[in-house]
Length: 166
Image (cartoon, rainbow, N blue to C red; front, side, top):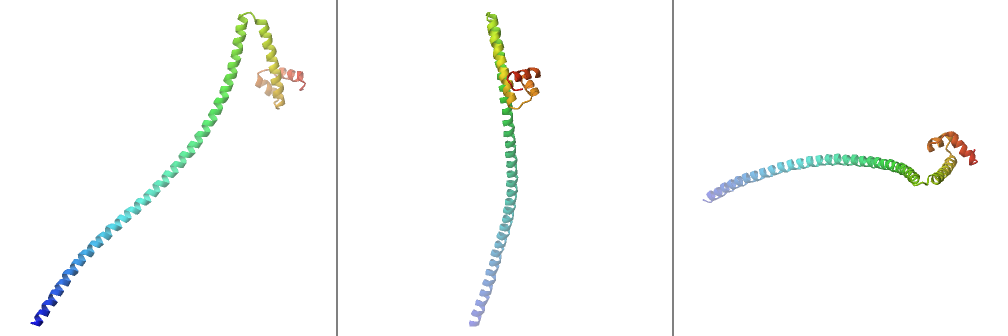
């Protein structure tokens, strides 16, 4: 009887061990599944990080290109502003000349012709004289001065001789 009880206990213990062992295998199978999915998730994360890094590098290069374009455009804008300023200066000097012509015309209409014209001619000659001497002192040649002031080379030489520069 004791033998039977011992045998029964051994059978229960072996059956319990087999049942528990099967449960452990199933549980360890779950761990394998979890490990498998965790590895898959890690691979996806690494791939995503790599793609993100590539995209960031691409964006940085595009940003550098845009910065270079902005710098180039700023330089072009500055050059255009300079050209516009020169044009405006030239335009204003033409407007002043036009105003002088209008003043002369108005004065002619009101009978002040001779006095005003003589004064303007003297002032203009004086202005041309000083302009010729000033440009000559700056180192411009006679042909350059003639072109710049829109007068003949002979007139330039005459004014320089008059100003004791030749």
